[in-house]
Image 1 (cartoon, rainbow, N blue to C red):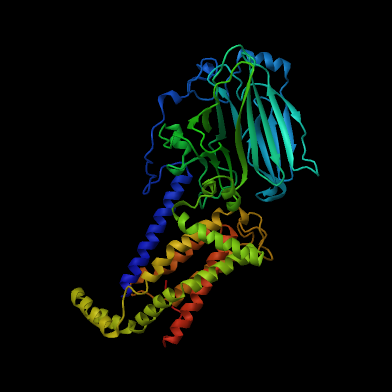
Image 2 (cartoon, rainbow, N blue to C red):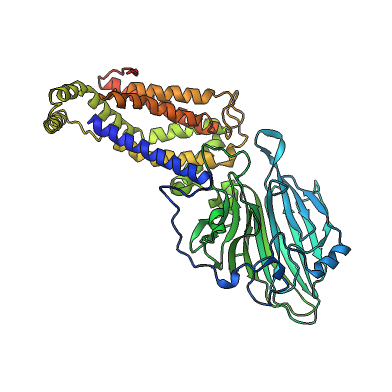
Length: 566
C-alpha cells in the first residue's frame, strides 16, 4: 500500500524536523520544546554545601564544616595580602611533547593549555587552546583548602622546578608552595608525563601551627558559559559540566540549570569524577577510588560556572604533613585513552541516547582505520560493511517495493474507479494485495529497523576527535570541517534526488511536489556539515541506489526515472 508507506515516511520526516527544532532551541540557550531533559532522581544538595559570600571564605569557614571554595573574584585574605608582597605574581609556562601549560602563581592554578598535536580549527599552524584566561574566554583548573583560614586558589605561591621536559626525561615535576596562613602551608606538586594528557597532582598540607587542623580539599573546573568558538549553528553538541558516579553513571548538567538552581546530580559519593565537556575535548578532576567526597556545581560570577568536588584531608597534627593525591585530565576525547584512565571517563565523548550502538560502531571504525590507515576510506568501508550486514533486510524492503511498483497500475485503476467510494476502494486494494501476496508494510519495517544504527554512526562521526584534521583525499584535508568547495554536499544532493527519482510518484500532486522538496531542504544542512558526515551519507546513498537497481531488475521491474512536475 503506497499510501501507508508514504505516510510512515512522512511521519519519520516530521519527527526528524521536530528533533532538529529541539536541538536548535537547545543550541540557542532555550529549553527543548518537545523533548525536555527529564529530571534525574538524585539527592538534593545539602544545605551545608550552599556557597557562602566571597568575603566569608575562607575566614568564616569553621574547621570541619562543609563549605564551598571561594569565588574566582573573591578578594584575598589579609594573610594572602602579606604573602603577595613577598611573592610577586607570575605566569609560569611549561611544556611537554604534547602539552603546553600556563600556571598562575596565585593559587598554582592552571590557566591555559595548548595541545601541540591538535591544531586550532582553520589554523593549522596554531595549537588548539582549551584552558584559557582572556577577555572572551575563562576556563581554569583550580584547587585549595577550605574549613578554616587556609591557603586556597587565591593564595600567592612560589614556583620551583624545570619548565620544559628534557629530551631524555619521561616526567616533568612542578612545585608550587604557599606561605603559611595561620601556620598552615599548602604545596601543590604537578607531575606531567611524556605523551600524556593526564597530570598527577599531589596536595601537601603542612601544619606548622600549635594545634591540630582538619581542612578539606576542593578541586574545581571554572568556565564561562559560552559555546566554544566556531561551533556550527546546524548541529549542536553538549557544553558544560558532567559528573560520574557508580550509582547514577554519567550525568550532564546544563549551565542554565545551575543558574536557576535546578541542577540535579549525585552530591555525595565514594567514587567518580567531575568533568567539563565540549565538542572533541574535555577536562576532568579525578579522586583515587574509595574517596568519599561531595560534588558541587554553582555560578560564581556573571557568566562563570564552577563544578568540582570536596573531600576531607583528615586531621593534621602540629608539625606534620598530610598528602592527598588527585589527577587532572586535560586533553582530546580519545576513547581508548579515556577508558584507560578511569571508569566511565570515555562517556565525556557524548553519543547521547545511542551510546549502546555507537560504542561498537566506533570500535569497528577504529579497527578498520588500523588496517586502512585513512579515516575517510575507513568511513566508506564501515558503511559498506553495514550495508552487507543489512543486505537481507534491505533486499526484503526493495523486493516489497518492487512488487508494489509492479501492481501500481492496478492500484491506480482502482483509485480512479472507486474514487467516490473510499471504503470500497480500500477493500478492493486489500484484495489485490492478498492475490499478489504483497505486504504494504514490507518496504518500511526493514528500513525502520536500520535507522537507529545509522543515527548512531552519525554521532560516532560527529563526536570522534580523530576526525579533526584527518584528510581523506584530494581537496578534503579535514574530515571534521565542511567541504571548502561544497563538492561532497552537491554530490550528496544529486544522489538523494536520484533515489527520489527511482521511486514512483504519488498520485497526489502536492505529495509529489513535497517528495522532491524534502531532499532539497534536507540537503541544504549538509552544505555546512563536516565532510566526514557527508561522505558517510553519500556512500550510503550510492549503495542504496545500486542495491535497489539490482533487485528491481532481477524482479522484472526495470528502474524508471520519475521526474518532478511542478
